[in-house]
Structure formats: structure tokens, C-alpha cells
View 1: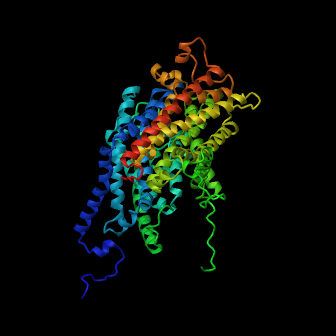
View 2 (view 1 turned 45 degrees about the horizontal axis):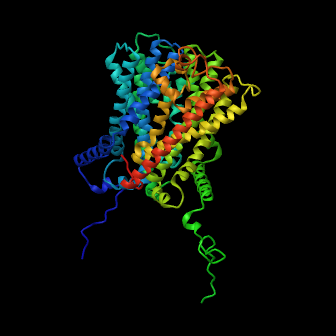
View 3 (view 1 turned 90 degrees about the vertical axis):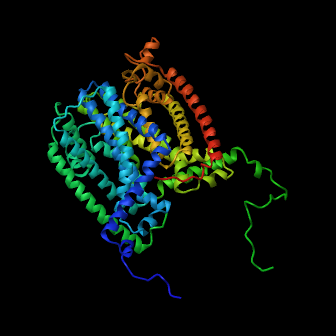
Length: 293
Length: 320
């Protein structure tokens, strides 16, 4: 009896599927939705995150506000801390739920299924970003609103459009970096866990999470050219506190917006390349299903 | 019978006198606890450190606490308070000790998540003859050790590079030893509490220990005097063992330095006639609050343990 299946050597499951561009797009969009779904639904199924992900981080941000209060700092510094505290939620989301995720999926046994499915792996990462964004934006908004009300922070925004554009560009660059890190962490294996730790407080420090990054001198300039968090936060502070004497030493918000555009493009291209290289390597070395390493 | 000799079942064979050893079913009390704790601690250390070379491990271990201290030192510099060495010592000690807190709390909580979600061994550990709580304590020990190393190095950097004044001849060593022992016990108690919570939650609970530590950071006087907080929050802070631990370490290392508990406008000063607590008051408060925290942690852990068993949470794996 002849087999209904015909062997046709192809380079990837996408090629094997032999779909039209429309089918490919529809599948990738379904993948985005499918990967975002458990993150959004999970939020409603277990509500402990409201306490642990919103209330407690707000208290941590408040600690830095009180440090400035104890030092009788100018009021805009309290605003800098509040804005920094809100943006940390996106960074933590990128580190914990993007960068680590592929390695985690490998440990769970899902990664081989992702690579076997006829979809672009970038759509899986994009779905993770969308799902994670829902939770982290809730946390950021809560920190911003509660802290602004409680500590009497007043914003002075002259260029709303630019501020919103910088915020969106910061997110795009951050999640782009998250995609790059996801590939690297997958390659580094168990070291990824420790890298996560390394990318929290040290990045808060060089990004100027609680103070203007320009005060770090050369280190600050370096951070602005590498870390989306540093450049985005600095631009947002300049735009959100337009009436305060912002310390010199960093470019203006327009230039920082252009840096963010460049970062977004570079990170997305690097992520695409890294994922392809990694997939090929993992296929040829047969390591997609090797767990806990 | 063939000439092949079977290896002797050394650990499983009958006792030499041929009877049944009831200790095998009953357990050997302290000896079993000691052995379980030792094996769990060794396993925890292996999992923490066997993946990399010591230099890289060292960098990972100290980067976090050193960066935390630097953030605060930069905040002082930005405001122009950097020249106040007493305040610099205050924040360096607070942030250095905080690495103990984060490591201690997260070590225990992450052991639960690691074993349940990643290695999927929790159910097997649970049904083994070892006491589950003892195993958890052993697993958490490695992270406490890493946190301790980070704290010592942060203090060293504070003294050598950041100009924190330190004189070993004025240090109150007996007080330091006692408050450190009592403080670490309290941190472990809070870690047990978090482990109990993580038994009930899903995989995303990885960030919960840090979130709890962040909240305690606000009320423990780690980096600013409690006097700047509203009175009700100061009262909560005074009921936390971490507040008294940090105050005790500060008092031991820099006798007469800045206080987080007392001072003008503080609840402590308004309740009594003293401007700051003395060593005996610190010790009594630390032991009392630490005892309450430990008892509460054990009670919560036992309740969570029972609930997890009832609802089959010990072998659940989650993800999103």
C-alpha cells in the first residue's frame, strides 16, 4: 500500500507547509494571539499578582521617594523616582518573561514544539511581549497614579506627542532587546538564571533609575548608547518635567528618540538573525529537547 | 549458583544482630535531621555554583548588592549630601545587609519553585523520609551564604572605595555576633513564610520574594530613618525584626552613629524619653519580634503544607 505522505526535503516547517503569504500571516497572527492568551488569562485566574506585582513594587518605589525626602531633595527628584519606578515594571517583564522564556520553554519541553510548528518563532516572542505588556503596563500605571497622587508629583509636559512617541519607542526597543536576550539566554543555558540577577540592580544603577543618568558621566553616556531603559527614561524625564532644571550631560529628547528608533531596528534585526542561527544550530546539534542545561 | 557475588546491601541489609531495626521506620531524630539538612545544603550549593567558574560566580554574587549600594550613594551625591560620611555609612550598611535579606527570603521560596516547576522533583522530595521543612532550610542555606558574601564585599567596598569610616577597635563585637545570629534566624523565618506562599502560587511567583523584600525595605529603616514615615507605618516598622537587626548591626559597627529607629520626630522617641534605643533594648526587641515572626512562619508553613497536599499542588506545573 502506498503512503499518502510524500517525503519532500525542506529547510523548515514553514517551507514544508507550502502556504500562501496570506496563510502564513494568518498563522503568525494566530501564534501571537495564542502565546499572549495564557499570560492575559493567567492574570485573571490567579489574582495574587495584584498584591505582589502592584502593591509591593509600589512600596519599593516609595522607599526611594523617602530617601529623597529624608535628604530634603527638590520635588522633581521625587518625580524622577516615580517615573523610574513605573518603568522598572517593563524592564522586569522583559528580563523575567521574555529573556528567560525560551530557555524556560526548553526546560518545560515546549521549545521543540515551537520549532516544529509551521510559524515564525518571532511571532511567539511577540505574543509573549503582548501578553507581558498587559501585566507590566497595569503595574506601571498603578505605580504612576498612586505615587503621583500620594507624593504630590506634578508633571509639566510641553510636548505630549513626543512624550508618547518616546514611551512607545522605549517599549519597542526594550522588547526588541528582550528578543535578543531570549536567544542568548537559550544558548547560555543555566547561566541565564544568574544573568537575570545581573541584569536587575546593575542595570537600575547604570540606567539612572533613581537619579538623572547624566550624573554618571561616561558610564551614563555608554548606558544611553546601549540600554533602551536608560535613554528612554532620560528622554521621558526631560519631557515630563519640562519646567525643572534638568541636569545637563545627556542629549535632548528628540535625539534620544532617534537613538531609540535605531535601537529598535537593530535589536529586531539582531533578534531575527540570532533566532535563525540558534534554530539551525539547535537542529543540527539536536539540543532542542535537552533539558535543564 | 553462578560464581558472581552480589554486592552487599550495606545500607539496606539487616542489622548485624539479625533483627529488625525500628529506627528505620521511626526515624533517628536529630541524626536524620542533621543528615537531611547537610545533604540539602550541599545540593543547594552545587545547584548555585557548579555551573560556572569561581570568578564569574563571584561577579554575579557581588554585582547586585554593590550596585544597590552605589544607587544610594549616587542619590546622596546628586542631592549634595555625599560629603556626609555618617549618612553614607548609614546607606552602605543598610544596602549591604539587604543582600542578606533578599538572598535569605528568595533562597527558600525559589527552592519550592525550582523543585516543583523546573526540576519537577518536589513530590519525590516530599515523600522521602526527610522532613520537608528541614530540606527547604538546607536548600536555602547556599543562597544565604551567597548573600553574606555579597554583604561583606559591599561593606568592604564601602570602607575602601566610598570612604565609610570604620574602626575595628570601636566595634561592639559581642553585640554584632548576637544580632547577626538573631537577624539571620528572622530572615529565614520570613523566607519560610514566602516558601509557604509559593507552595500555593503559580510559576510567576519567581518575582514575589523580591517584591516582599522591596516592601520591607520601606519599613525597616534600611536606607533612611523611620522618622520620615507616617506614624502608623513607623509602628509597623518597629514590629519587624529586620528593623531591629539593622539597627543592632549599625549600633555595633558604628556606636553612636545615625539611628534609623530613634531621632527627632520618630515614634520611638515620642513613646519614651530616649532619643535612640540602647543595645539592650535593640536585643530584646529583636528577639521578641524575631520569635513572633518565626512562630507565625512555622504556623503558616504547616497550614500551606496541608493545603498543598489536600489540593494536589505539590506536583503542579504552571506557566504563561
